Image (tube, rainbow, N blue to C red; front, side, top):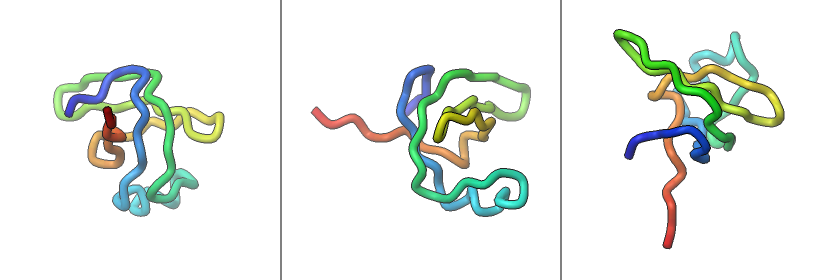
Length: 67
């Protein structure tokens, strides 16, 4: 499932590996407001608790939409 601007995402357990850089935990929700596609990876600007964090695609997942 592709992530796009405006999507609601949730942080994954891997975020614990960058705990020394950012104060985030697994299970926090935010909105994607920016997407930067690089040669090797994609970085997402995500607003969580009124702060913007730049996270890789393996640190977040899209919240599943239910009908």
